[in-house]
Image 1 (cartoon, rainbow, N blue to C red):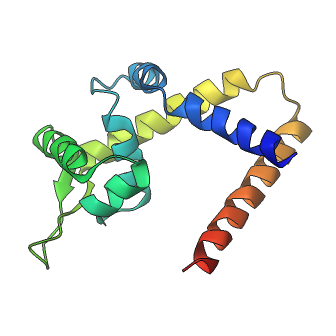
Image 2 (tube, helix red, strand yellow; image 1 turned 180 degrees about the horizontal axis):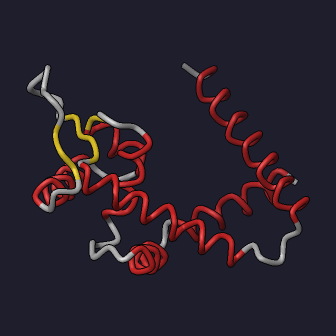
Image 3 (cartoon, helix red, strand yellow; image 1 turned 90 degrees about the vertical axis):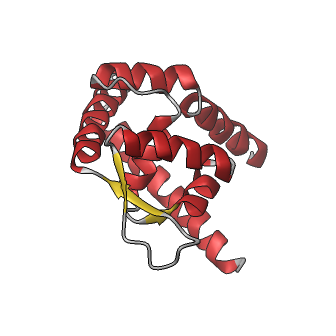
Length: 147
């Protein structure tokens, strides 16, 4: 059964990591950015003032690629650098334009999920939320215990 759990999680991750999924979500949100921008915007929205190194680690990309994408998003007005206390570490946050973009992404994502889960009953949806939140809690506590 453990392998079946892994396989299910792997398929979910594969679904969410496909650039065409990100492209479609950005299109639904009315945002004309490259798909590689989506995980950056979402993660920075969840963790304001994240460093580029932390961001790269969390989205599974190398530092230099993320740094280049961040530079593009800063130039586009979506991200902004926060005050640098340490010249070696760049911290970024969403600009007001980036916050609006994130809201548009959230609305589009909710619409897509509502559509995809339309066959689920309210009870099944509540069960899914409960199980997923429990899984997240379990995985995060396991990560903490390995330190």
